[in-house]
Length: 354
Image (cartoon, rainbow, N blue to C red; front, side, top):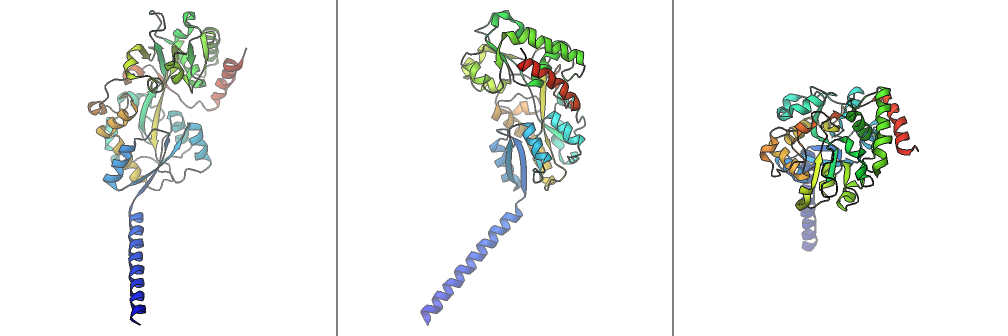
């Protein structure tokens, strides 16, 4: 009957529309490139990712890790085979290069690599030609002082932790490489030294001169504790301190990297050997280091312009906690290989010995 024919017609039309819609969705899904990132938590600017996706049609998917150890454990377990870019720090970048886990970069596809700071190039001894890695950010720990709560003649060096006048109001990072490296630098040694005499001297300085004046070793709550007045001097990362303090009070805070240098880091962008979308990975790296884009990255996280020489010209923020010049005497935390056990033994004594 006419009614049945009408129903059949409508059913066919709905089916055709459904199939067309499904085909359209399938086409969009397959035509969009996907780029899988494995980055540190809170380290990827959302607005830049959105702009990259809009301009290129690349669909960026981000997973996060909280430590190099977590990232590397996943790498070694084969759990990162789907990632196109990973963001390891310098020592783990070195390990991954040595284990032949990374793709050699096509630098013709990354022309913005020319904006990388000369200081970064000097410090990146693990990959001096950027054959396998492109620096994402170069940063450092240092010392933050609440100038309203300490004597005006405090020493702007690692020896500030020897000052008994501030005993009971200071903390250092709960980080073996940071603390032992700082002691080594304070003695004029390489922050990655494997000389046992150097390490014994550094251990003695920490135990005899620094530790008696410390409230504790703290890598988690030092920023909040400093802002609440629990500490007057903290071994710290500047972003963790200043994030907890109103900008109107920043003038009361003296953050410095001692002239003798300290321990610093370079976080890198690397492409795994088995990455599926290496072309898009190169495009992402080049996009990030476009100076206008990189300036937005720095402004998002209140980072100083240590890494990309041209980005400062486009930054809105003009208050920097340190510059690349302040890092000239500092040492990159390097992979110590089997020598790490020399540090572990002494750190146990520092942290838990009587």
